[in-house]
Figure (cartoon, rainbow, N blue to C red):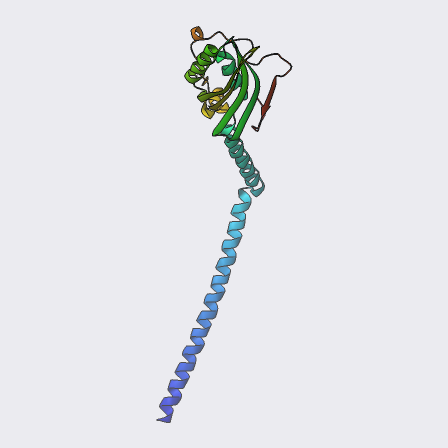
Length: 204
């Protein structure tokens, strides 16, 4: 009986040694395989020129940033063109406040002088027909010696003066030429003329 236990112990020891050797060899195989795979990855990475990939990625980021800026950029020149088209000869503006808290919310506030109250009414109608101005409101109407003074507040459709859309050929619609006689400039030439703007970006 003791001989049987001795034989079983030898078998168990041999099995343990064999298992330990197999585990060791497997670990060595895994280490070798990982090292080989890493070397292959490094070779593949070198073939793709990391410096070039980095530069192309940076260029792509800049192009996306530029596209985003152009998409929201407004062209104030288009605004002034339409304003000149829709301004009556009997109306002149002495100040302009151009507020653009963001590219989707643009408000203008203006002071002006009209020849008569009827001129103000006609001017309001012309502004309403323009695709650039929305919800024009005339207030502070005051008849003085040099004419009827007034204040104007209106919203500007940002899509109508969007730089990308204008470059693409979309021209902001004013009104039919037969309905308005426009001066060379919507602003009077008096010494009190002023124009201020809180919008960011340079005029186009």
